[in-house]
Amino acid sequence: MRNSEDASDRKNIQSVERALNIVKFIGQTNNSAGLTTISEGLGLSHSTTHNLLRTLKKSGFIMQYEPTGKYSLGLILLELAKVIQDNLDLRPFAKVALHELTEKYDETTHLAVLSDGEVVYVEKVESSKSIRLMSYVGKRNPAYCTGVGKALLSGLNEEKLDKVMRGKKLEPRTTKTITDLKKLKKELRQVAISGYAIDQGEFEDGMYCVAAPVKNHLGQVVAAISISFPANRIDRVDKDEIIKDVMDKALSLSIQLGFKP
Image 1 (cartoon, rainbow, N blue to C red):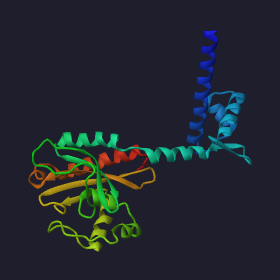
Image 2 (image 1 turned 90 degrees about the horizontal axis):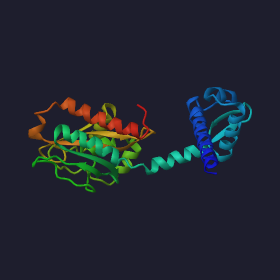
Image 3 (image 1 turned 135 degrees about the vertical axis):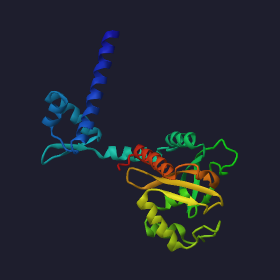
Image 4 (image 1 turned 180 degrees about the horizontal axis):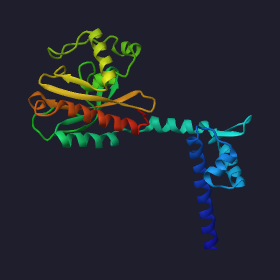
């Protein structure tokens, strides 16, 4: 009796694997494949392939275009993908990247998101040095004068940027703070082109920050990562190398969110 149950389980597992392979195969063939193409491509009999296609079609995982008889992926997959995107927590992935940056430079790193025109720090790895940027997870700072803020704002078009900044005064935090919206927009355009933002004491005197945007599968900026140096330590390291490292980590995180460079 046990042997027959094991055989039945193996058969069910095999059917599930074949069905999943069909879904992947259709996706890999420009989302359009006929019965014969699928059957030959996966090395399955026509009858087995037909039965699996019928089950997948009934459950909504694939669709069939009647005039040609070809199959494509079903809308339920789009719905499931949206659920994943809406609930994907970037922080565990980001923390690895932040740790790697902090281990290399021994400086404080952050992951931040944009909220009502401000940056909110959602993850942080702290430097072991006594002189460092003082911050904490959950802290809010202005976006217009911080590295992560400018990286986040660079993903907005002019209409959305105007909406986010409406009613907000660009107050001078230091003598280097950009307080003119036109100048800020010009810098944000450059950030969008270059892929990174720099804060050279605009938010806090004596601090230097490099940040880069993290993008989702639609190419939208959803977060930013940064590393901050006291000014007396930034001259001891290669700034170009820092920029490259931060951009590489941001790109790696973006790819994990489905972004295709």
